[in-house]
Amino acid sequence: MNEFRMKLMKELKKILGIGYKLTATDVEKNNGKVLHGIAIVKEGQNGGPTVYADSYFKKYSEGESDLEQMATNICMMIAHCFQEDNSGLLENIITYDKVKDNLRIALCNYEANLEMLSKRPHRHVLDLAVTAFVHIKEVGELGSGNLQVTNSLLKAWGVSADEMLDTATENTMKLGESYNILDMLEDKMELPKDIDLSLYVLTTKDQNLGASMLFNFDLMGKIADKLDSNLFIYPSSIHEVLAYPDKEGKEQRVNQRSMVEEVNRESVAPEERLSNSVYYFDRKERELSIDYQGKPLSEIAS
Image (cartoon, rainbow, N blue to C red; front, side, top):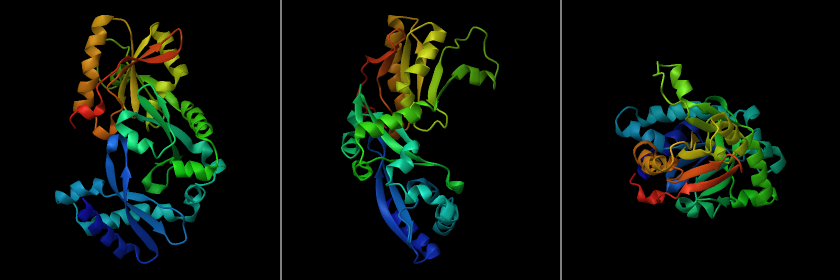
């Protein structure tokens, strides 16, 4: 991968010329996943986009695209980032008052991310960690992006971790939404009349790191009240969680334990796994707890 990244950087430099600085940078993502980035900064600017070589390597190795064409496509795409009217957030990222409205929280597995968490302000809740990021709004064809809040960035802002995380949490909870997963399927296909319509998805409006809705007790409470039941909460991925009523007792608990681990193993990319645990929302107390402590994520084969 590193050899491919250096080749891609060489092609990018040919097109961009001397007015740009390109730096190879490895970015640690969730659950120890490392992406091989190329940071591109225009002369006179404080920041710029990072392109990940990983997403292009497969196409290159399978002969779907050559390096010159890839570099050309990348340069066309990132051109929007260097337009003067789109540089505001990057230029002012170290000023807390200018980015605080764009702060959001994200969840990750605590034990699986200890090294990463040592570099980021966070809260340890249940078997999870709450971290924060700055949501960078859409920039041309690049779409939106996330800038993780690190200890050094927090220090530059001059605010406490608690204040920052409280603000990020408040912002994020406003973005919560839920929908009945089978209602969505009903629009696309005819479903049996006796099918259970009690499974809900909780996420953010843009479905970006929406598992944070695990701590949106107002949203969860409305679902519990509608179903007249406490809720089991399943960690679908770092982007959403699933809520299902507690109606079947002990048998339901036994079945769901193996189900969560199986889904993580078979259907969720390693870097997007949140937990093997099953959570429980108490409708009356409006409290969340771990109903079943799952195996460490490291024990699941990729």
